[in-house]
Length: 542
Image 1 (tube, rainbow, N blue to C red):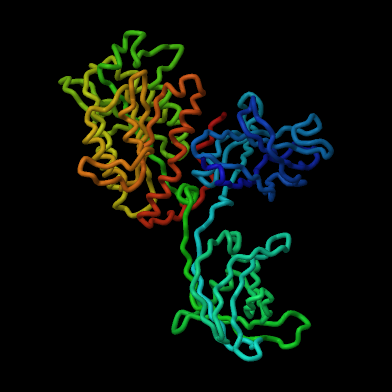
Image 2 (cartoon, rainbow, N blue to C red; image 1 turned 180 degrees about the vertical axis):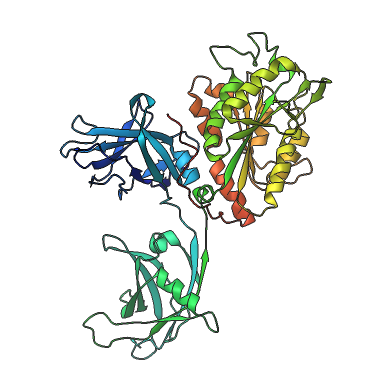
């Protein structure tokens, strides 16, 4: 699960001028989870008086799960003072619905406010801005030495060691790191060490740090030599200014207040190296798009689509398993693809005009552009292609994996974290080209792509588990291991009686980790997000 990836939306609103004679508005914003009918209030903003363009300081913290469609509803009220948001005493000015995924993918979403029954609330709009608040941001490598420390020993020199404490918001102190002891030395050089930015400063570079130098005592009664205060920001700035010669930064080691001498030596920062560890949200909010491709099994083992027993039978009242799976996964991925166009492919069928067997044809029958407009476009292309093809075989999926891999390879050559590919393969049986499929997966593990395989129907999928890699490392026929575990296989029957969202949660839960693993391996940082625009393509009524 990706639930520890929190984010915080904050917003501002633009409202029309009130009618003449009305008192100024006192605006208040409420946020709830779920759609209009089932929304549960999560929190509410402060009240901003006499302002038709309020910018709210209140930050709403929401857990983020990539593998779920998390619906949010924002409601705006003209507050009359006493009761809570949404009561009869407050005037409803409009609401807006969206998903967490939409806000995360775009960072800034502006949408119109709507009154009841989908009626526009004049020209009123609401803008929601998001940022991640719980990424770990990596780690830092530090190296310290000291000079001319006070001698606390009578018959030898001090045995100094250094401790670094983080000062938390409640003014308590948390030990971050303790160096080794350097024996009999008043100008010690301590070994370099690594510490996470979260541990060092809670990823807040202005947070105060207390650094204390002690003279080691084997009985545990260490003698205090001195201390100083700094921040991670100060250390970075000092290291950045020393671009020529020795890169050092020194702090006098002062005695505690009232203890006499103003300082007891100097501690010098010899080196500071930041190693950033980016999160999935760093890449998504940096503009990385998720491109979704679905590949559908059209082999004869599915049964005649005109027969109600067929896995491809189109029941006007109940979608078949193929439709349920592609919609469940597609509804998650669509929030992360700005053009909302999805590739839809088929394999194992004879296709017009010559009715030759194909294992990687576009189900819209456009060889130059296999993309469909939205998830609904994929559904319509699937339904319209069934009468035009002849189900045949065998169940070869390596050609489709290789086809998507070629596009992913082109993307890799840009050396940017701009597009990641998810291939959903829906099949009713074990693949017949297992050796070629293993080879294709090993090649794909080096590219920006993940593969999800859903087994449809009641076949024995035991042999498909080898592709998942959960029971061991998948290898090519020549013995080469995958670079990353990029395949997730599940039989649809395990979710037959569950909600459609359960399937999506299962198969997509590993995608964020796979995205981070790939870009970390390639050392591609997140892209700089595009300049924010006030408009959004999310402006249609809910």
